[in-house]
Amino acid sequence: MSALTPDCDPDLSTCGSPLGPRPGGGVRSTVVLLALVTVAVLAVTSAAVPGVVAVLAGGVGMVSALVLGGRAVRLGRRVAAAAATWSPQVRRSRPVG
Image (tube, rainbow, N blue to C red; front, top):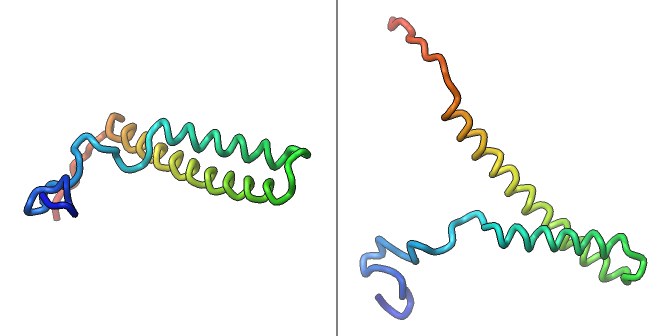
């Protein structure tokens, strides 16, 4: 361990906490992104919000929506892969030659 790599082994084979955050985001960050999209939609559609703030809120909402869309696609792929492993498949052998 050193000051630069406090959670790493000396040979750097194990770095970081084994219970640390996993890549891809969690439920809390998804809820925050949904809240950002909701607030952005309300700010853009409201007449009481000045134009500059509405444009900035719209940009934040668009980025948040893109991130949420990516998460939805990733979740869909995982569900499809899990369904494919559990579905019954007919395996037929093919003759060699």
